[in-house]
Length: 199
Image 1: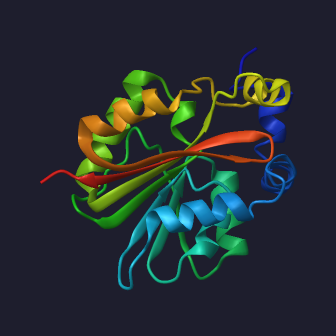
Image 2: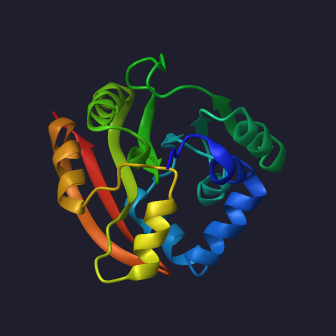
């Protein structure tokens, strides 16, 4: 199955559909949101860049200087309209030109499984120069023995679902890994990784 074209892909390019389906499959988003907010631990005055911000709903977790970037013009337009107090812009993460040390914190939520190993290396290397302090990754993980989880990951638009150990290896190339944990939310097993800029 080609995960970048066709009915399934186009359906989830509709922000309202994406938000609704994810809410159902996660049995609500409260648990995931709580883990993200705790992992980021954003301090007063810190800035954050949400890479692959999608429909923009994670922007509601943070006060202050938030920016979201996404490849989809549809998602960016939706986010700008729904969250007018936040900053959203369109961009290809593989070609972003952002000055060094522009943001305190970089968030990549359900993002890197859309990219090959070579692309993930490129993305994290680039973002290691953009971040002033730390990076946070949230990712779906394989869940052996759970048929529903297997099916959903098979249908996911991202073709590179990785284990926690595989994700850790990527992060540790460019950041000092401070936290790596697994948790379940609805039909998903999710990872949360926190990396700090290397001195």
